[in-house]
Amino acid sequence: MSKFTKEMIDDYAEKLLIGLTEEENKMVLDEFDEIDKNIGLINKIPNIGDIEPMSHCLDNFEFELREDDYHESVPLDVIFSNCDCMRDDEVKVPKVVE
Amino acid sequence: MNNMYKSIVELHSLLKEGKVTSDELIKESLNKSYELQKKCNAFISIIDNAKECKITDDLLSGIPYGVKDNYSTKGVLSTGGSNTLKDYIPFFNATAYENLCNHGAIMINKTNMDEFGMGGTGTTGFTGTTLNPWDIKRMCAGSSSGSACAVSYGVYPYALGTDTGDSIRKPAAYCGIVGYKPTYGMISRYGVFAFASSLDHCGVLTRNVSDAAIVVDAMKGIDYHDMTTWDSKNINLYDSLNDNVKGKKLCYIKEYTDINLFPNANRELKEHLKNFKDKIEICKNLGMEVEEVSVDIRLLKAVSSTYRVISCAEATSNMSNLTGIIFGPRSRGNSYEEIMKNYRTEGFSPLIKRRFVIGSYVLQEENKDRYFFNAQRIRRLLVDKWKELFKKYDGVILPVGRGPALHFDSNLDDYDDDSTYLEDSLQIGNFGGFPSITIPSGFIDDMPVGLNITGNVYNDVEVLNIAYALENAMEYKNQIAKENKNEG
Picture (cartoon, rainbow over the protein chains, first blue to last red):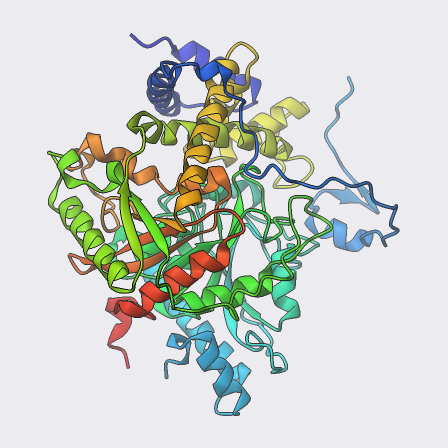
């Protein structure tokens, strides 16, 4: 029996502010079951927990502090070319403070 | 007139000799774009006002090409194949695209793709499915579906792609062309819509290995804006091409290639693996040593889940900026939460929603070790295994997938569950950032199939040379999709 439920899926989707249809919920459930089955197999690999997780494909990145570098900012009319809700040179945004 | 069927070097000669103008090439490429759009839906935008440019000694100057729609192109619609960015016009260029502009290359269109590069079918983009130009009842695979379709059809000699799992290399195989992703960090990802940053690669789709080398030479370079880029100025892929591969050593993985391991294999898989073994003989005839090696099947069967867990987790984080407030079409709602929820619920395809929910789940504190960290551990085991192979071998050679492109109405019951993991072998190239190239290797049912060569990081020259030699020893170089081939 699946350890995942429709309610769990809806809850995780809600945390992301995503609404799911019944059909989409079922698709996620099915994929979870498959991933969980495979992860179950991975957990059977001896001493898996001792392996250092690999977060990136190269391990020789060189990090450096750079000097501050002055750049021209992007002109307002260019920035506003993607904005369909504005007044003068201000962007209208939804109210976020009650 | 079919100038667009020619290679980059051939086109450059024609331009330099004045036998054709850049303007004529642009018109031809635009005409082909509209023709293909009607037939296969390969593009999101076609750039009617593409301008010719001065012909210089640069091989790419004045030659048209295509750009996958997840590259930011200043002043040109860049949607990433998503309804949530259907009107987005960037105000800056992706570095890789900018580099090509500096070489005089001419963008003709933005190509169709799976939404945000997250699908592998070419069916999930908001402008609809890309059809395979060899057989419109079949898919191109994805996510670089439009780029593969257009290069295969002969719209231009090359198009840009991105590859997080196999999104350049698998569509290339299914469309009978070359798909190359170089070592991670050789090409800047700045301005390319991030999917899973630790796996994302830029690359190119072409009809021969030389063209792939020429284009990546122009795209690559260290970039102030992408801290993962490295200095490759001493690497010149095109000038280094050399088909003397005598003494090179390759291996292939028994668990991916031995037909005896798949007693329920269908005819396509049998023919595909036989074709692959025939090509191994060609490698040997070229003077390469080729050996079979064995890898723990548990690791190979874990590739798919490892990829899904890591890519979904990184995607969930990367795409948290898709709120519908800072960019994208604003949805209705009385609060910002309502606006965001409506934007995401109505804008994302079911596939994207699924990926985000999975990503969110595996990153929850209580689930992180079981899913996310264990996936990263398997990633290390696989990469270590491949690096161990690269101590002895110059490359790993494998068939791509289980045969030719799937029909849209394929019944997956016709496919053997035991061989499903063969579909995921190329993802290991992303886990390790390895240079990896797919070349066409034959036909099954008149549809192209491909093979892949992957080498150790920074050994791009080696990988390209092996592909170049093998390509020259086979008869599939510079092929144009069959349904289009006889047009003159």
